[in-house]
Image (cartoon, rainbow, N blue to C red):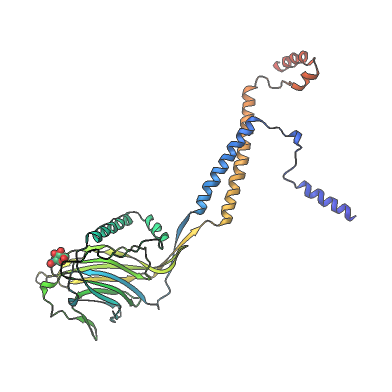
Length: 378
Ligand SMILES: *[C@@H]1O[C@H](CO)[C@@H](O)[C@H](O)[C@H]1NC(C)=O
């Protein structure tokens, strides 16, 4: 009884066989079939090869979510050169809460404002890249991917000894601020704390020495990542007037960057308006304080940039699709073409039964054929 069941089960499984064996003698190979097979295998190899490149490729996925982290501090990285002597200028931050932020992380270094020839070349290249970035946004993806490989975007040191006096001041370093909107500024005189904000000691500085021409070599927020270009990097402004106010309005977007080489919590920013540079002239009704003002605001949305890759299983599925698909498609096409040729060439002989092999054995075949064809014509 059990043996019978086993046999039944075996038979059942046998029935399910989708690959029935055809005896070798029934298999016929033809030249056309061979050609089609060669073509099919070539196509398979080519497509599989290209598919492999698709599999190797990665892309950036952008996601947005609300930034819930409001307790941490925001780091501002600065490297700005102002065309004034260091003892005359002061840089600091005032945030919405009107608390003055300690700016101990900033260094003041006397330099020459004019760039050396090599630095000038570097600066020009940087501006070219910035222009391209503004036009082609997909370039940002490439930059993100190559973050770690990227050359540092800092200005190279001078290759010559400056002959001019050190009439400019390079302010560089970092500041930690609260994650609220604020105002980073560089104006005349050092800042002194004041119960309601702070004041700059400007009375001792002659107006003739005011010159807020400046060059921003680096301005970024959050973790500093070499290779990332920020929108204001390379900005250079020369003012023809002593009393000028430069303003930048900056919106900071927290960004979580996760590529195969680096994962970092950083911040991108966009500069919304820069056309507000104006000359301060109290007599003409244009009031204000000369200096460089960067008003920043922090977006409550966070961008998550993740580098993605086709998973291996998907690659395998697609590979199977290519191989199986080409195999069955070419098979179908082959038989379809064969059928069409049969129909076109042999239309008039349809119904004619000419067993070739018979002629070998039987001499009467020839006498039979005319009869049959006559029948077919009726
Ligand atoms: C400020 O300095 C720059 C660079 O040295 C110079 O080109 C510009 O003429 C100066 N502006 C004034 C008002 O002196």
